Length: 340
Image (tube, rainbow, N blue to C red; front, side):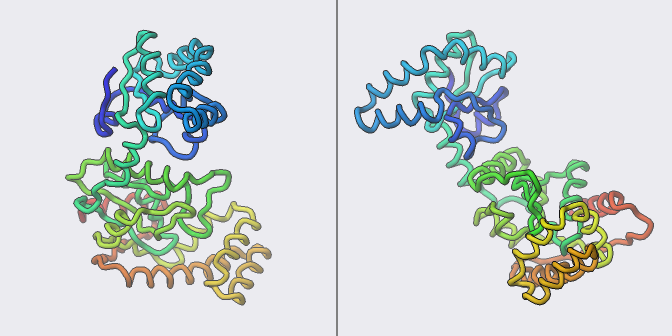
């Protein structure tokens, strides 16, 4: 069996098998990994308790007792997942679980690759990335400026894009929770960023959307956030009415109760009387008027945040007449590439 460091492991061809317990996997994992647990959550707890109370040897024997009857099905599952592709295996620290699985897979005629020091090594890698030396270009603009859509357009044009809202499963504001979609843990969010960052060509520009430190429940780590704050900002300058119409299309299909709950979350900032007015407008079906009020609030808070940044900000305005939304976003994306 071959042990690889994190960079070698990520570059290697094959399917990543996370052999930790389901709870460990659910909390956070290497992006793209498939969970093939050696122990269930309860079994892991039993083995862990024995290790603490009676020592290594007793715990190992109990582990073999648990795993023994499951080996045949385990191999069958592994082969179904791998489909003749190489296996890349890791556990929590690169110890008994991944070594045991590797031995089983070798016995079954497979040639697994192991991550040296396991998930612990990947986490160290994820938390020690070099963001400072990258050429980061931050796409800014008031709410409703289609910053995310412009990022996606940049990606279709071949640019390198770090889509933080996509990785966080959230659209970034109080109104940005995606219905029916759970956000990842902060740890998993960091892992997703690290995996995306690893695959970038650092000699080329990387585009990212301007964000607050928190994207819903996900937090941007301090090193990346500091780099964002000091990097070149390109401000998408779209007319107020254009932005209102964009938000009307984005949120017009949401349930009134969801929009009202989102308004309540920012009521302290809006002020009680203004929040009450917005809620009444939503209840009465006058969503456009409600959006106009909330948009003015977000514009003022965005301007306040911009004043704190140390980076140079360049406004990007284009003639948008007679263009569809998708044509507008593509036009902005092409213009941004020309600038950089």
